[in-house]
View 1 (cartoon, rainbow, N blue to C red):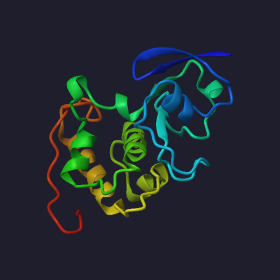
View 2 (view 1 turned 90 degrees about the vertical axis):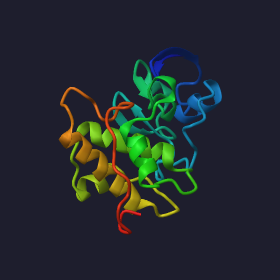
View 3 (view 1 turned 180 degrees about the vertical axis):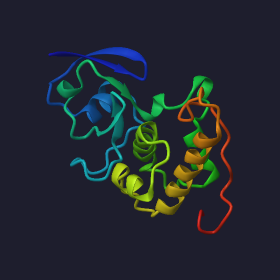
View 4 (view 1 turned 60 degrees about the vertical axis):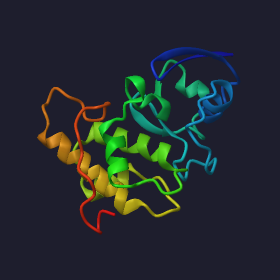
Length: 178
């Protein structure tokens, strides 16, 4: 059967089985390999993408459930010419990535969280970002989220800080943030 998906702003028609996980459609059919396979049971979050703005574990989301949806993958997160979003800049400034395997899913989950709640509490972060990082970069993730939340609070309301080049974020300044 044929399914219509808008992925990173581009319309795609996929002729695949409806129960094919969205992860494999993205990676194998469309060659968008930034979304990673981690566990295959929606537990780790390495495969997180956004479906209509909601963070979804693509390993357990069948293509038929995403038919007609607007999907954003890590490849669609940045701006023109590869410009980084404020969140990606914060990720770099706070040295979040270690091995990097979980990072695409983590960034997609955090982007969805910040779009819904631009000033999340620790409890909101824990609830909204349940991705697993085997390197244990959680304190740096939290510091990067705090940095972006602060940028949101102090910027011009007409700019979306989850978009490329929206504002600058600070460097990590303490051992706790590192």
